[in-house]
Image 1: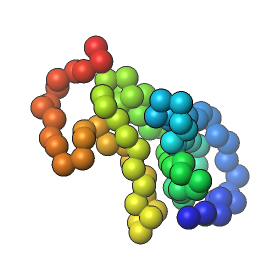
Image 2: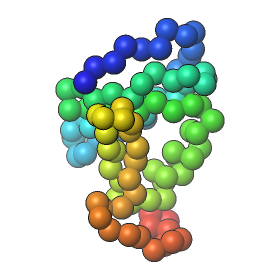
Image 3: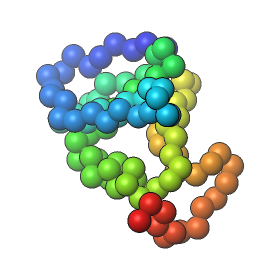
Amino acid sequence: MDTQPNTETSRSFAAISLFDGHTWVGAIGFMDREKLDLNSYKDNVIFMNCHISRFNDIINIIRYEKPLRIVFDPNKVEAWIETKPSGQYEPVGEQEGV
């Protein structure tokens, strides 16, 4: 699935590249506009777009939650980060990675 970028003027403030070992599996881009580009999946890489106000939230998830995986739903054109193995629940406040 390939999507057209939002033509509204904006700047990208940051991007986080996501790897599974040495394989690039995704990128999270942070922009300063309310209407973001659509999330997408191309060449086995997921592109997730967030407002810059979510940067610290995402950094904290990356810092404190393990394992992580990025997921893309092509029907809804949504991407998200999961902090648990599929189908499992995790205890609240376990603080892995501390």
